[in-house]
Structure formats: structure tokens, C-alpha cells
Length: 71
Image (cartoon, rainbow, N blue to C red; front, top):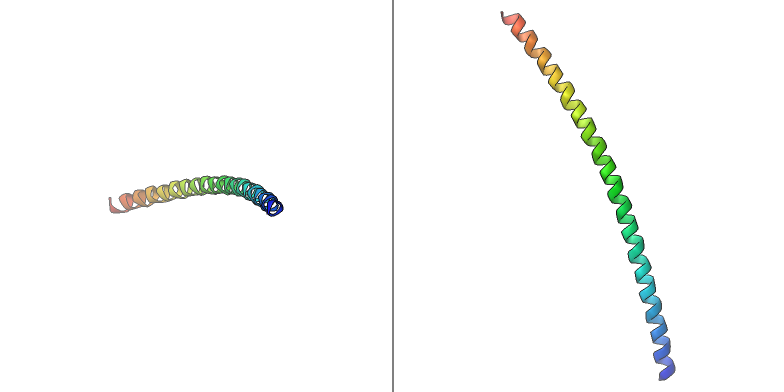
């Protein structure tokens, strides 16, 4: 009986260690994914700002053309 309890204790300790390692790996992986997402979102924001700026410029040109043609 005592031997069985020791063996179970060893197995449970091993499982606890494995779970701890898995948690650590998951945290690291999630941290990496968060960093990737931040970089992607930052890039997308930059692209959107550029597109919006270009669109505003086109709208200004169109407005000037309309004003010129209707005067």
C-alpha cells in the first residue's frame, strides 16, 4: 500500500510539472501572438491613415474642380 502511494505521489508530481511547463509554454505563445497582433494592427493603422489622407486629397481636388467648373 505504501509503495503504491509513493508511486502515485511521483506520478502526480510529474503531472504537476508537466502542467506547469505547459502553462509556461502557453503564456509565452500567447505573448508572442499578442506582439504579432500589435504589430499587424499598427501596420494596418498606418495603411488606413495613408488611405484616408489620399482620399481626402482626392476629395479636395474634386471639390476644387467642381467649384471651378460651376463658376
